[in-house]
Amino acid sequence: MKIVDIADEIYRELGEPTDVGIPAIAYWLRANVGKLNTAIYKQYFVDEVTLEVMCVDPNDETKFEEISIDEITILKLLYVVHYYDLQIRKNSLSYNTRSAIEVVSDGHTVRMVSPTEIGKNLYMFRKGLGDDLKQWINWYRLSRSTPRQVAGDDTEQGWPYIRPIYRRTYIP
Image 1: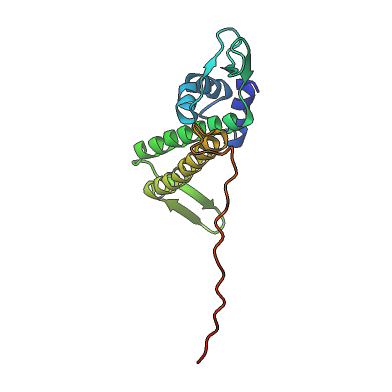
Image 2: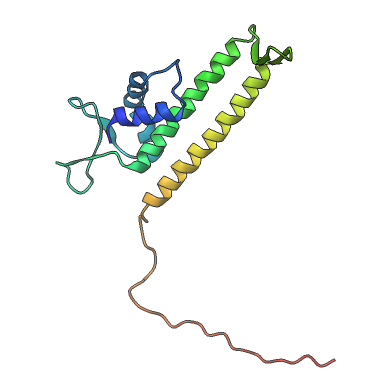
């Protein structure tokens, strides 16, 4: 899958925000492939010609493979966590302004929300996203892991220990 397609998916999943565009998201994805490598213990790199994320095939070092859907999911979550970190930072710098959430003209209702409440909600949402990211990374690592060593002699079948069965009756 191409980086621009991944950036487009992220842009649409975030609700098409006005403060960030698809080129900025694509640039961030290319610039932070190292975070993905660190998280999932792989060796992805950005191809200098096509600017796509590639990985050397472990079976044949002359071939390259594209990023798979599992890695794309983790990369998307990395960006979403980064995006909400930026939103929290923006909210924490704008404590002097008041946000009107609801204005009704006929009923003369204006509902104000304090910036600290918005910051708390953004932080809790971001914390949940961080937990989801950790869980996805752990699932990825577990699904791709292989044992380094098999201890013991698994070539010969041993005799299983048979526990004797004692039949006892309870006499009152």
